[in-house]
Image (cartoon, rainbow, N blue to C red):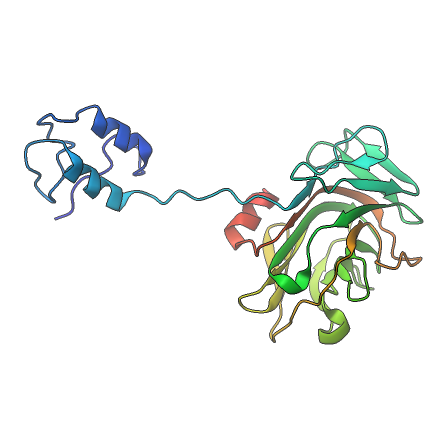
Length: 264
């Protein structure tokens, strides 16, 4: 027989049930007298609390990005990192769009020479990573996020057919290309996850996994910063032509649940 542990009947066993129990501490209060299970001992005490604790929902720690550029600025050449000090610098024809973003404002890039450059964030060879952003527009062959350096590459980009792809470690392992076209002029939440436990890359569009490696891939070392809206070599044709919003970088592989929450 299982004790009734949802003391306040709200559908979840949590700290509010603990508070409810302490309000009757030391009393002979049948609803809270659940220990020793299942019948109790006619007093609300630590034995009841231990039974309650065994049924409590685990508290999930908030997943915090290593870098987060909300891109909500209205003027100036600095894109501020709200998660740290990895502030980025605007280059070329980059225009703030304070009222037209998916989440607040956004950064409008012209596809010719506009991009955002950031300092070093992380070394892909040292662990897992996730990179996410909202985009609208863009053309085939353009790049959304890349890392500078000899072993850097395209973290998120668009292939010749307008499909989301990643060239992360592509120099040695080949690109990972999805079947999802993201250059249709609509807002899309796009993302890339590298899981150090499985050594797989995975691409996400609008909160849903769209492709994943079938074989092992390893991250290549790089101490370069990021380019948002251009390739690592700033090649013509790779500059993004559209809007980018809410760019987030994590030093862990986000779960499907966490990614769905970001997209919504």
